[in-house]
Image (cartoon, rainbow, N blue to C red; front, side):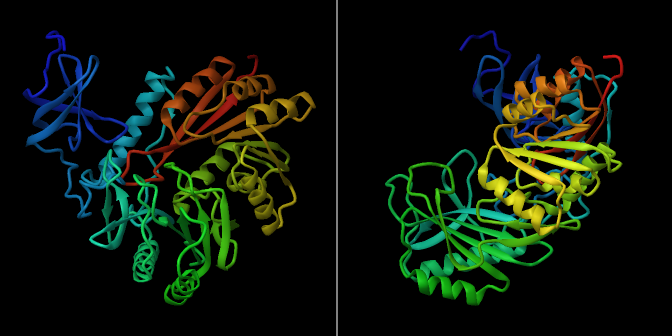
Length: 459
């Protein structure tokens, strides 16, 4: 490694942390050279040991903190430092919201070159704990018994846990009970190294409003030993269980679910509400894991759409129809598009469930279906996008600029790709009015945001 770098491996240096990375590590700079240090917080002065150096950045370990951030707190979770599920429990919730607002503001200015766009303070939760309605827990073995928890950071070592402080308590109860029952009947955990064993994951889904529970047992094998007895015990010992499902994943893969899904007991779906809208949730459905904040996010999207009841709306990346059905409450007509066929089936079922006849759905890539609609004369007054982390496809952005809907509402789970796409839309004739960050995932660095855009007359 060249001696021109300002630090070398195994150096001990004093630093002041300036920022946080997207993984929640503290960022310090030594003569402009960034060092990423887990557990460091902005404003803190500390001694760190340099543990790795690359050409453009390095990594360090926190040795001693001389000056603590006023936002530093003790993490309440006993396995926080081993577990990879959260990154910010050592930062107070007030500090988390300020960090996320800064993250959104910084990328809009740095990547999007959007000066002067109104970025509102982050909409957070009154209680930023116990919010997740879905647990997906890998199962392992230890001293002959089944364990389950999150993977240790950057490893495939399972950290066993009795409870997770960002999960609904009901999900903790389900995972513990299933581990205990399956262990009693001699079910072996999946060993990914040898591709042996049976039980890979336990998934629990909980309807926050309805109290309904779905349990999914993901196995490597087509059959589960003592299946009937295990299912009967689970159904009788956990209150609220409406569905027990078996998913088979026989592949050597990190993907959780396989292609074969069958109901072992009860119903195919459970139900829950976001606001006044009822949703059917199957084992494979994508459904937001924080329904309380999902309503906050979608209410803001609806506000930015500013519908009068006369508009045609297109919802790109519509999933199971969550945003589409919110919009259909106020729009004349909503057209949703989504690449996953099962999600579209769910969306149609959810429209029927709520008696909504003004929402229709199509399977396909948004960047192919929407241009085809446009060629056939189907335009939109308002276009809503809620893309995956990689942002909108270039072909879709080009179609938006050709179609020129009066308003675009961009719902984002990645501030970086949001900033990139807003720049493209601004260059094509739109003006970003305002951006509202929403905290969907407290105790982590993830931040969602809604941006409202309007077509500039004369563009």
